[in-house]
View: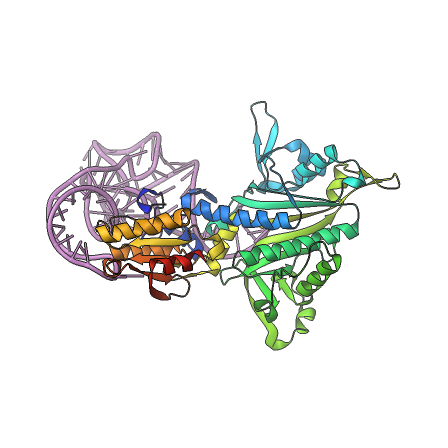
Length: 437
RNA sequence: CGGGGCGUGGCGCAGCCUGGUAGCGCGCUUGUUUUGGGUACAAGAGGCCCCCGGUUCGAAUCCGGGCGCCCCGACCA
């Protein structure tokens, strides 16, 4: 993309409403613009990030055997009355009425809807297990939205649901998702730690929240220092091998990790003192087993092998896709701007033409831009070098290909790695080879 | 939802207390200049001063009501 023809409105100064670093940087780098409290428009570069994250989620969900669907954002109140949640949910649910005065709502989650779909479509135990997910906008009317996309009212989320014939199957689905989540976050270039979470009335140990460790996190977290170094999404584990799933689950849950809500002083005391870490975390995912809560309330049953009707065991699995963009920035930035992990950067490289209008540098930049195509953002603005450097650092693409008249005369460019700050004078082929890696 | 703050060109802010129909920096446009880390000079464009009502000869400024946004706390399937 040519920057001169793109809507990537970077800002030199920070809008007053943005307090925390990810919010400031997302506004300044031209990724988003606020439309209402907790509601944001995603501009071209921001949308690329959102898509990149969503696509990693998709690929890992597919690997784990989940099927993608897309359900509506607007739901009927009737559905929620069936489960009893219409009244239980409270003012966080955005309730609306259509022209016929029918009660509707903007979905904060989709357990009811998918359970209803399953009820209409699945009659036999032979059709289970099923694992389905969608990536869709949700709305929760937070009392106090804040921190930009980290705590918005409208948010983009992957929500997945499992349906199994029995508890054993549900546990397997749960472990499968935990593995998928660890792989998903690993691919995004962040460390997310699974932490014991509240299971409510269900009990057991089948709810985990996934937290990215960052000083600005909303939750206080306690964890074993091993989480800072161990392999979190190991490819060696096989989804189709139950023993692998169990081994992985044991590995992830045998080390202590809990949010302050679930912190257990007795268990904490057993962690070797020099291994204890206290910090803050940003919740970017949660997995949850809730048994037959919805299948019973909504009368979803299948006929089992013995002819008896069985309410499927369910679980749900969320990943905050829009929240992840902010969370990743919280975990990966410096004074100059964002430092995108490779896998989710809006562009692989910025091409900085330091002498726009100079035949030699222009030609060299065009050549590089042709070679990289969609992966590159070509800063072809008629602007000062300093401005281009500052914007490139702010936008945080992994590589900067700096083309100035000095090097261009020798067909050389300077390649800067955003994360490490390393610079090298290279010929074009060598630079392209590094960028494409 | 309790407590606090703010709303003035695209962004950051001053002006408000002590009414006399707007100002600064950045950005933007044009020209010159500069040319590897947000250059300098000059000339410009751009404002329903959040909205409605009241007081007054006169309201960005005072008074009343409303709306919006932010911060602390509580809240956060």
